[in-house]
Length: 238
Length: 234
Image 1 (tube, each protein chain N blue to C red):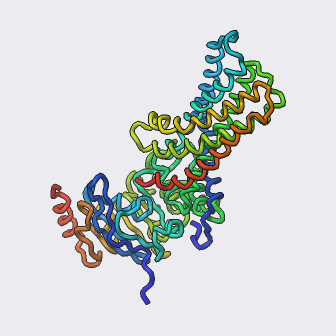
Image 2 (image 1 turned 90 degrees about the horizontal axis):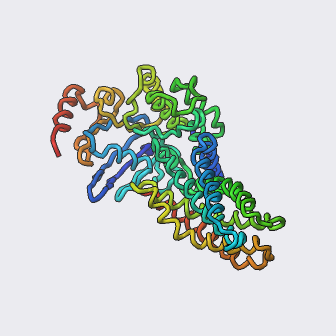
Image 3 (image 1 turned 30 degrees about the vertical axis):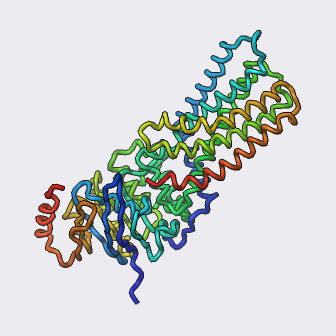
């Protein structure tokens, strides 16, 4: 029997102001899979991520995480970790309090220990008692990733996660993503950096005007040719 | 990282407490909204006092109106901030993505707001009693009860409207415009019942107004809790 996919999105549609921002998008990710999603600004990538995270309700279509519909709410959301453009941190709280808050919201048995482990993994534990607002953008990004990973999610949704990270931060993130995938998690990675995306991907997709205009297995792709084809696709004006 | 298998998502009440504790910790650290509301309330009491002609209006007639009008506007300052702090860096996404009931976010926010407005009342009521030299004595407990009922109604409605208004461009204007009409029954009932206490009348005379406050609280806490999840859809 085929194991249940980590995430199955079918026919997702979402409009804003009469414009279809996500237009009939479907994909499936199994354990260890990574879908690298590329596309020009305004293609609908972030909206797609928000739909899969359960932050937005689709006008049409469904998302199942480990076989549980997102419409059923908490059980599906508990398996998702989101790293977005915004840090999702409270500036007045310390780094540790921010990550512990996430751990408590996900019902972890030992939130303090889980937060400490996540902060160590992102190599930011030495700033644990600093208010989040006092950290640089890069360090905030590391804390944001620690916050998203603290509950060891089965599905990781990452929107430009490498943005603002220095070499040590990037290495820590790659390590965490690799470790999570080896543990059975799936990854949906939105990035403008094709080299970075293709290095992690098992599937690659290009999104434009809310649709997947290309979506294929990474094994079938030649990275060099893909990059030039992507530039051509992305350069086409709407 | 802790494995998900050992995790158990918090129930609605537990999640509400987590949200409330977070909001209170932030307010305790920054104190911006509380101090603003407190200073506003005390200045309001002072200005009303100096504008008062004691020969024309008795203290017991004026004081209840002063107290509850100031309470309403000072409370709005805190309510304004309730969801404002969630928008900075989209922290609200962290709450919405968590495996907790959306109602828990509302209840947690409302609980934190209740502590906030109770803090304001804890200073404003003695200030009004002092300024207007009211012989409150044994009625202070009953007045505290009226304050609690009024505060519950105010935060129930105000928290919901704060969530609705925060994503709009004119949130500072929209929140009072949406809320104030709904606050009228609270202000009326609280002012009428406290006027009787401040005039030294028996608590039984205030009972019909207290029943309105209780009914208002039950209706709006329930309705706003149920309506809240729909305010979050973009």
